[in-house]
Length: 109
Image (cartoon, rainbow, N blue to C red):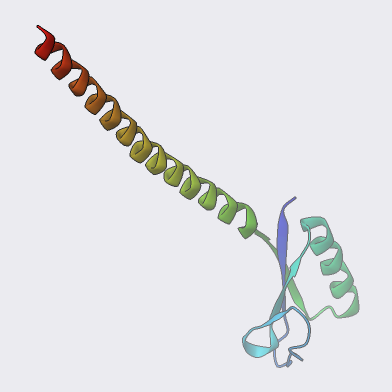
């Protein structure tokens, strides 16, 4: 679901600063809304209360999803590094064992 920010502009007004809103210049403030539909509904209610107020709903990307994608990529990188290190150790062990076997066979011949 797409979140939105409701921006309300009122020239000469002052915001209270209480709640989750962001107080901007000239009494403008913005508050995050859970969905675009709720933002548009709130915008209508505000317009009915005071025709001089200007409102705007702006879509906002969910930062949680973006961070989850980042950490998934990071974890994949760590898994690849771990695999590369463990794979290299296994190859060295195999090579060492093969070299010992070849040396033993050479002594027998």
